Length: 346
Image (tube, rainbow, N blue to C red; front, side, top):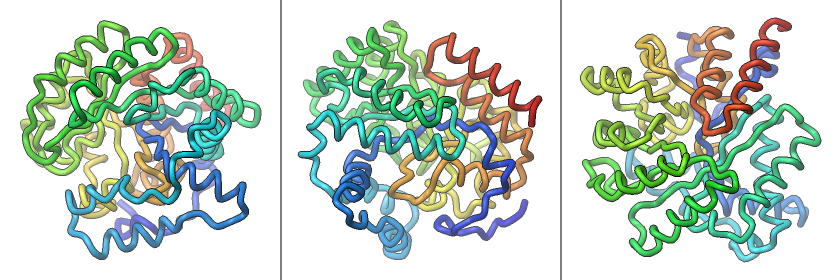
């Protein structure tokens, strides 16, 4: 492996071939306030919040693991009142999509937490953002999924789940599970009931697990309909879990920079991505919270290349993502054909 001493906030030069490589991001959160801050900062002619400084303080002042993770999503540089306007909502979603598309992304799945999917005309507004970005980057496809924060009040969770089931008829593609406790074993009883309903409605299922410890990986893999798992970093430390993950066929949503910054992996060189690949576990590269952790999907692919993944392997990660994507069969087949065509012409 090369550049194993690369720091999570280092600026890196991206090889032109890697820059041109078609990419996909299946695990990127909406980052509502940070994205809103970016949009409003441009409109108001002011600098946005200093996330690099925030990330440097996060690593300097907090131990790796839960102590750092609990700070993600806490800083709200802009209040959310402005997000009530449809035009602003479209602009911030377009900001996320355009950032990825500018790095060569052909597919992005955006995760919307809290009550966002209950917003009137949510899917219509999401598609408007997608179409806006496609005017400049016609290769981009985008899908929306809902992140369910299972520690919320049960009545609120039920409203969100019911909203997901309704939105499935309007183009919502999947759900993502977040729960507490995260670093020790949680009770998955209610989660399994939710995933049964979601899978029956045709929604894809993914879950965060294994980011901070080995807890919840096996439980997540038992969720009805689950085909992907977010992070799973600590599965590599347990041969039994590694084998279980491989047998499940689940795709790992791998976020290199997030894992190193939070401390799920001690360094890029120590990240288990290569072990996953060598074990035959499908991996997709993702950004997670790119504004807060100061990365992009292009940077994630460049770092994976520095860690020893050849260009053909990187394109294979994009194929993995397309195969695992919560999208229509028509979009999937078109994307796979476009990847094949790009490879033949590159």
